[in-house]
Image (cartoon, rainbow, N blue to C red; front, side, top):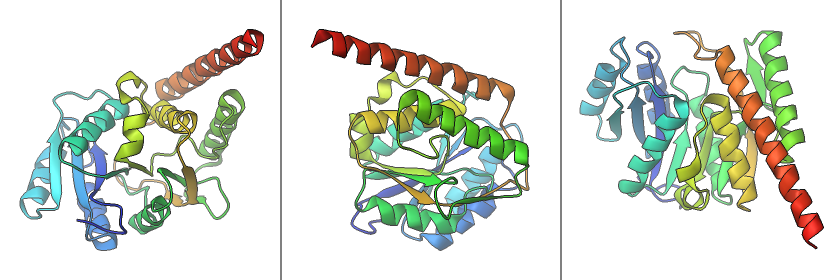
Length: 249
């Protein structure tokens, strides 16, 4: 379970109705990084994904399952999984989608970069990053959302909304997880911003994002609206805080 001098590594795969894709992504992770452990965090999927996860776990001691009783959103699933990882003495946690959009081959690049960073983000929008099979509207939405985030929050991150990333457990402990309430895209922005504000070593590495071929996307208008509202709110709070510091001098 120990690799690259990073300690015990756990790849967290949140699921909701990922019956078809889950076995494929788990097999890909096991092949790409045989020494890491996997935690499948299932939000009580009605399609039987939880049962598939249990079967995978029974046949592989490196695979674990966290059954959540309700579908409470991506952020809540990851926070529960982070707590599970901490209680089971993992040193590194990785966020990775179950739908095949995150390639296991890129997992190795992210872990390599973590050897000299606290947080590593898999990025579609840095040099050599790319997306496959995305409509132009999705690309415009993602690029525009990340530009908006950089402008309002002042963070030097090209892809703050991406969901393929790794954290040292020590970094999560500094980032005050108890106050994270956001979901979806906004959860990822929240986490990236907390890492920057905490003065942690944050790096981006290029990944290839592949649009899902199995199952249905969880993206909807409410997720985008939440992200826009919260980023704007955080940006205003940041500017007010900056002004207070200026006038306090």
